[in-house]
Length: 438
Image (cartoon, rainbow, N blue to C red; front, side, top):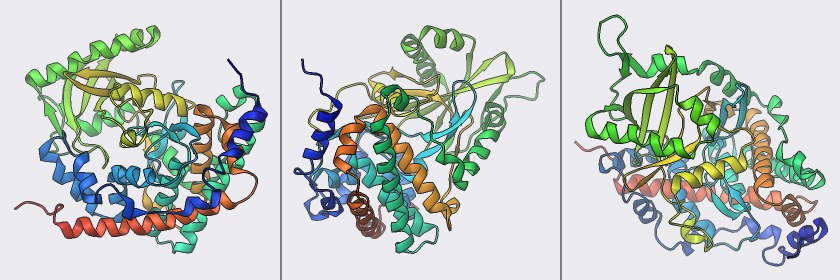
């Protein structure tokens, strides 16, 4: 076996410029799609809860950015038609401005990081950057920015990614693995998300999502009924959800098993989350430890194959979806939910994690004015850390080089893809698929 030297790994990255030049990343060929955008979205709906499919279309039809959130299968197909570097890292897969947020680390500290990995998979590192760039343009437009300002933010994101990746290439591997992002202190949207997260305690969730089950003193609380977004699950279905804790417990480390064993399940609900995940089965279990003041909410979220899997020959389409997401998250995050794991209910595969333990996210309104560029730089640095932890900083830095050509091209792609997304969104609205049934 040959162990490549750092010089050889960097040279490999430089050699990939012959495969696709850095300036070529601005290209977009929507006419090369294997099917129309509407058909690609419709295919992704197969197997989902039929009653929720129209809800997903309605959420996508609200705005171009809303459409973008639900159209990962479309972008995956578009990216697959373009030449790629072949430099592989773990992809977030759905890298956009609202898929970063604050949450509680295992030691209780609040951290800010990428926090959605439903589409995670190993693939060309630049795919995450192109999706983030397009999201910055779309979110920037929604927050009142002109295209020139949104483009500068996208370029700042990729330029910061490049600077940080070159720095990672100079560090020891252990330093890369535990690197803390300090630029977070400079972005107001991150401060706001951390403030929200500080208030989002399990007890806060307990008060917001549950009601007393009866007027009797000391009775347990149960989930609220807020159909179609949240409703209780009972009978055999609830029993199957609770039973899934068994296989989940077996994959946890012994110390996590010990902690979980102190909590007992009290109630089960079905909860609609996000935009891309609407229609997949998503359950919440209300559990109790040392009395009512010690609630734990576990989310048991159905995971199907990543939208990128059909376009990546080395992907394992039949691997456990929940395990794919959990392992991808551990690759990219420096601090991970201690209850992160996976299970199954029947032949469907699920991710398990805490529901909203000190979680806080940004809103589009948070990105007005100077906040967009500051936040974009945080996004770039966090993606760089995730890719360096799961890929090879030497090879990526070797490809990017010391200039600005790569950042300029990805930013230009962001503008082009935001324009294409707007066209696709208008097509969805004209199709009538999002109209409410009378």
